[in-house]
Length: 330
Image (cartoon, rainbow, N blue to C red; front, side):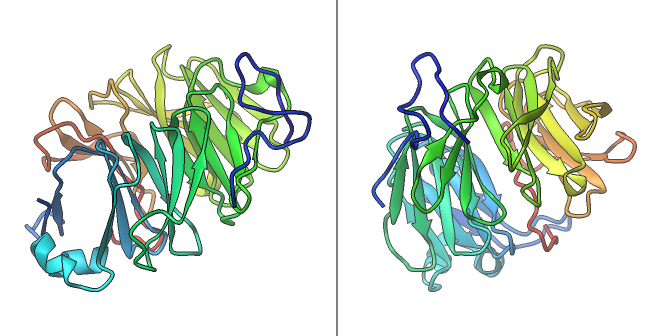
């Protein structure tokens, strides 16, 4: 990683770091027969959700800047937030951010959650300690759209309004840009995700998808006009890093071969013009996304692209669908 000259760039000199930092809701636990195990109603619209790697916690980020962390086991057993709130460690609410939460991610090994916000900050919450506020804060120079811990937990990818990927050292908050100016996106970066082993990461900005070597930070492949000129909004790796899902404003989810950049399959039948998430089921037999027109969750067979089911769980557009925890079961 090195520094990069860029129009109106974040601060960077030579190989120096880009940025340095000092070190009424209700839960319904009934299963209605359709696989639904809990319903959480929040006072503000939620824009993002994420399971912890072990599936024991669920984090929610809202438009009012609030971050909530709930224990999934307790959520199944207690019908209301009032009941859940008396269970030690079952729920945490943080109001540190000044603007909407765009993404959250759990550290792979420690009980730490990072949140990314339109207020240009990433905040770190130790949800096991009971601390009422973030324990650390990293301030970027741009609004942060997405954040992802490296599988080792030592580094952090940040997708921002800047056209370059920001890579942070999670311990020091030193941030670096890739060394080749020609590798960067031509538009703000909407999403960035690591492969399961951290050997690759992918990013999307404008109508392009880029795949990067996770060690050298060289762009190894650019998929231009990936969604026929429509913006690409979100990404998700699958197949041990061999395949990549992308969700775009052309109302299609597309599956790509990472090694060749070849389009493998198109999943159609769900209206998606705004930022909408896509993911695989825990066994990768299904591809999951949502239809913003109907509020339904949509499932396709991953091997054929055939629509398998639609779940009418929401009355408004679904804005985020988190990948299932590594242990499956959700």
